[in-house]
Image 1 (spheres, rainbow, N blue to C red):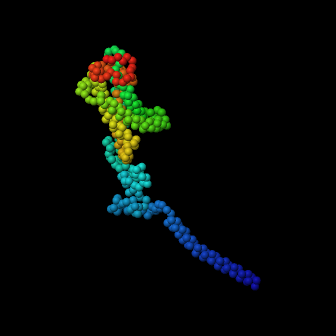
Image 2 (image 1 turned 60 degrees about the vertical axis):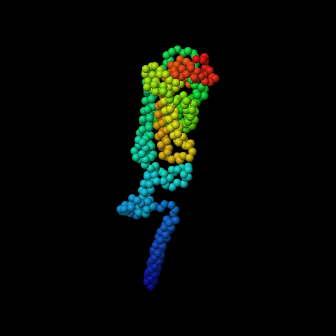
Image 3 (image 1 turned 135 degrees about the horizontal axis):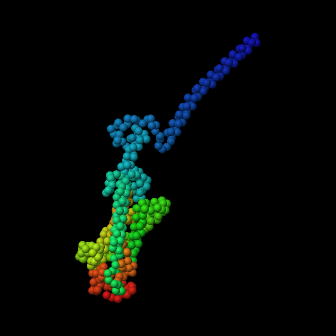
Amino acid sequence: MKRSSVTTHIQSGLIATCLMLGTVLSVSAQTQPATAATATAAAESTKAAAPGVQSANIFSIAPDANTDPKYADQTNGERGKVQPGNNAPMWRDVGKGVEGYSSLPKSQAPEAGVLIQPFVQYPGSRLTTAGEAWRQVRNNWIIPYGGSLLLIALGAVGVFYWRKGMIMMHGKPTGVEIERFTPFERSAHWTNAIAFVVLALSGVTMAFGKFFMQPVIGDTLFGWITYLLKNAHNFAGPLFAVSLTVVFVTFVKDNLPSKEDFVWLIKGGGLLSGHEVPSHRFNAGEKVVFWGGVFALGLVVVASGFVLDKIIPFLVYERSTMQMAHMIHAVATLLMIAMFIGHIYMGTIGMEGAYKAMKTGYVDETWAKEHHELWHDDIKAGKIPAHRSEETSGTTAHV
């Protein structure tokens, strides 16, 4: 009896245990789908609430979307519907120079919405984007040929000095001095000359310095030097413009062409023959420098420099405007420097008495007669006063 009772209790316990396990498994099975559904719903809710650009499943991109006849003409929005993440239409427009949206005002940033300039062809460049076209003109034409021009000019005066030396006076000084430049004329000339030297040295350094300075002094020092010279260039520019205007107005009367100038040009000023060709106060060579360098090239250099300095009012300073202004400015400046190299040479070590004339304002009577005979004759005839100002230097007897 006892054994039968124990067996019955054991069987009852096993049945109860099985029933309990079955209940637990049933509840777990019912809870898992609910939990999974809740998690999925939460993820969908989070995804829908997330702001900004949503990620795209690359496997949902239509592989045959490019078979659409209008595929190439699709906008970026249309392309995104069939090929999410494909922004080729947008970048194609960027490459064409199409303007996009920018919050910056047009008055301050007229091209803020344009990342890449449209295609152009500057003189000497290929048909390409404007920025690349400007780079080609600068690097392939202005830098190599402009640098060569300056070296040729320096070489020419060097060879001339080596073969001819300083042009000396043939006669002996008389001690009688004639006023060639008044204090005002000298002040105008020296102001313009100093501004020109600052502009020329800074411009040459910025354009060609990386070829002959940077390898010697290193990147850091070269960077600081060019930074200082750039600022000096920007400040010297307006001074050069104002003083150039004063120089032009001051000397224009004596630089008007005359029939004697053609004779001087035909004979080359007597440089090769050694015999001076008669001229007035300024000979034909000086007049060429005045009209070609001071007036024509000076006008172009100043105007383009004002654009680069952004000091012309009401002008829209777009990149294309600045690129063209830079190319014009660089070419005109290189031509002016090459022309003024000869002028500086003749006014310093190339001719005896020339530097003294601009330093003190006076020349000896012998110098005036040998180099500017017609001017000397006018002074002797009383047409031009020998001393146009009250300042005297040395012996100032009248001729």
